[in-house]
Image (cartoon, rainbow, N blue to C red):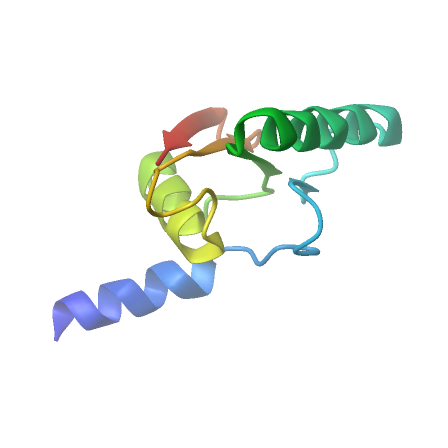
Length: 105
């Protein structure tokens, strides 16, 4: 029962993608439009060349969760990368907590 409650709390704290067409989600408003566009292009180019998917996410808060738990839940919830080849990468930045995490498939 406690595991179910913990999972529900984790999932409710995780942000949802602004658009499934984009790989850069700047919820903390850290990036300029030019930076966001450049990172989108980089992610797209890597995907085209290698099929690896890169997600870049900034959040205002981790909502009290450890950065690695937040990143893991976000990575799994959003389905970054192709499951069979584990080729996803997530770069998560939480500036208010001064935390950053890179999650891989």
